Image (cartoon, rainbow, N blue to C red; front, side, top):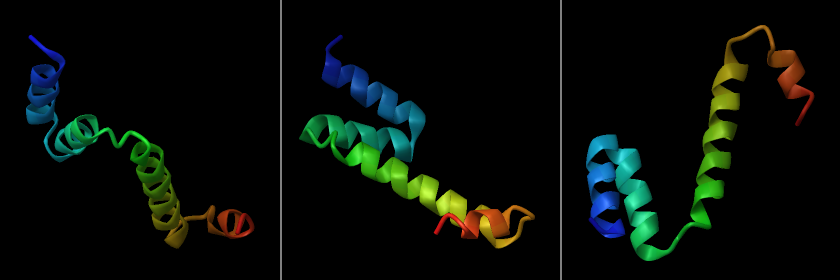
Length: 62
């Protein structure tokens, strides 16, 4: 069982996220992973800030 086969098997089990990581593995685009993680965290922060009691504290960060 090679690395490519293991990547395809994992991609099948993890759905869209697995397909994305399999794409990164095949095309040597690992530098995109931190960018996507930062975008996800920033989006989660914005969603949490819209309707929570911590909104005033989050707005002071920006």
